[in-house]
Image 1 (tube, rainbow, N blue to C red):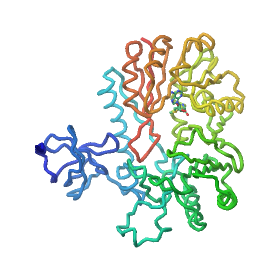
Image 2: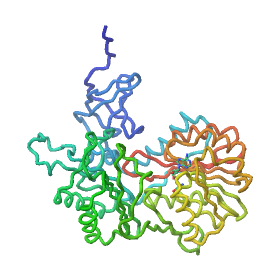
Image 3: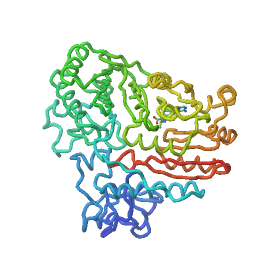
Length: 477
Ligand SMILES: C[S@@+](CC[C@H](N)C(=O)[O-])C[C@H]1O[C@@H](n2cnc3c(N)ncnc32)[C@H](O)[C@@H]1O
């Protein structure tokens, strides 16, 4: 027997959107039922069509506006509403910041349930567009059609696309004309690659059929205007080497580093594959002012596989906050957990006795050591390995107990073993940086028996999206 549907109808009229939050969705609560609404803005009065019925919540699409929220602004991007990238472009920036602040508070209250002081006002960006230093695009022989024409009426070449995945669809690519996230030169390079690839008749990779040559294009850039291009293809190809890449290098003198990656695998993971340098330098060099007045700028070499904070200017604000909270006096042993290419370790090193960085990507650890050499820093040590394994007593006996720990784990947060080790070691302060306030709140709750939260500082690394970076200063009880 079919179960009867709950009493919420398919169409809900005259609904007021009341909030914005989780996963970038707006929220309405008609008849006490939570409905998540993509691209809604708090204050909108709308008619909703229910498109998904979960046990505790529904998902609805707006199909008619009765009135528009005052928080709305005109989105800058023509792909808004289809592309999964910047779901909050329709909200004025000041409101985006307000909701991000609230996301941190909600996670700390609902998941963390520990006490903490008033959250400091989020550090917003003075550059809410064109702020990213890295973007990755995907080729497709059959782009997502937005013109409403049947694909039979479109030529094969016009069907080819180079852009971003639709939300939650690995096989659907939206061709991008202009992206507002990275410097505009990135758009020029991508459009040129697409145009030349079509002109030369290269095939675009079909993710479902697993056929075709061109798979991904990754572009990285620095503030000084240097660019790295990484082209991922499914099989080695002489024409790409002799034709497409030389054309690109000639057309864009800003490209100082060009890599070719051959990925014959079914998945798109390339960190385990050889990145062959076909032109220029094997890295980009980014510059950041030293936190110490009167000292030279710091330089960081970024290789093709290295993690580097995607928003360099905002990362500078985040590192500076960590520097202020650490309040180093040149006698401390600092651990930088999940250190990437050692940016934070090197940023703080001049004010510490020594800094030990731990990171699992070998190339990043090598880059971290290189970054110390480049900046004439001699009191850092970098260790490669999985945090849960290498952050152990043997290492502590060799390198010393931490006075201060900076931890900046990936979205999943810290492994329980790492949290237990921190509790055993009991450093004076822990500075916890996170791109996921939910796992951060979970981890701080586990640390809470020994640590109290002294400061909470959200930082907006990703304007136009719902993502928020958050910092917490913990001190030993
Ligand atoms: C959010 S990034 C932080 C990077 C760095 N703190 C920075 O500001 O550039 C997280 C880093 O953790 C590393 N990582 C992820 N899982 C790890 C693990 N289990 N053990 C060690 N490092 C890991 C990633 O490779 C990445 O470099």
